[in-house]
Length: 254
Ligand SMILES: Nc1ncnc2c1ncn2[C@@H]1O[C@H](COP(=O)(O)OP(=O)(O)OP(=O)(O)O)[C@@H](O)[C@H]1O
Image (spheres, rainbow, N blue to C red):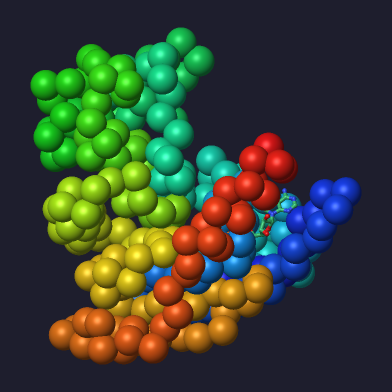
């Protein structure tokens, strides 16, 4: 069970954005869908402990990662969360293997034997053996996505948070990696919360979708097996203009 209630505000000199999101679900795969700037990434960041939360809680199978009323606020590394960042955020100077192992190493970049075995298992499971010593820049988009996913899984997380895992990929590869992600999630038995702008992603992977707009959940869509696109037909598609505007805002804030 993922149980989330988050109230927070972010602001700079000119703007302020209020997030007030709450959802609780047993669905193994949850999608957050909505226009650019709706508050989806802020939600994942707050769940991961990367953003201060004014009030609320994050509970995972009954374990409180955050509970402002009870004074609980676990640091990111204690939350058991695997995070796949938008555009992957791989370390360019580290090999594929070191990228995947990064969160498990001590300051000398040494791995415990059990962790090394897990890293090797992930490298093999994601078909990365031949390029384990290569740097990310020499990999294709699909291979980079696999490295990012393997890194998110390396610390044996209790939940996967995926921020637009497929955006950088062409449609053919996207379809293939969707299937891989579904298989991987099932193999490791980890629930996932995924941000996407693509209704095909929602239909292919999620049992539950939340439409996020203006910092709030405006719709909940249940996608029973086989229902596929039917439940999504009347959902709004984000416009190219929305995408452009947020990219500009983000560049301004960076
Ligand atoms: N540190 C910040 N200071 C001020 N505003 C911020 C900050 N971080 C995010 N925002 C604003 O909060 C809003 C929500 O951002 P968020 O990244 O969660 O959107 P999103 O739904 O993930 O969009 P996208 O799908 O394009 O990634 C946006 O308007 C964004 O500009």
